[in-house]
Amino acid sequence: MKTLANGIRVTDAALTQIVLRAAETVDGVKIRHPRRHLEVDVAAGEARVTLELSVEYGRVIPEAARAVQQRVADAVGTMCGVTVRSVDVNVEAVG
Image 1 (tube, helix red, strand yellow):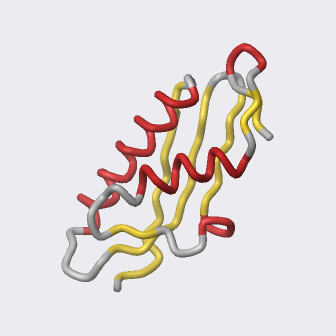
Image 2 (cartoon, rainbow, N blue to C red):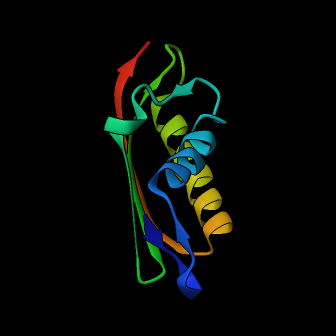
């Protein structure tokens, strides 16, 4: 359970779903095992996200990773009312 601004608390599962859904809106991107490969840290009104994903063969990996960073930052920032300091993306597979 993470505490956001004004004492509002959000479960880890809810934060995971926000990140997962935002990341997977990018064409050709999939997070294969979100429980093991996705971490969201929220403290003092700031968030840091780390996730591992797979990118569909034929996609430009840096473009896909940047798109994931942007969409995740926008979703977490908007829905949770926090400043997103970083979204670290690791591509673990192409397939």
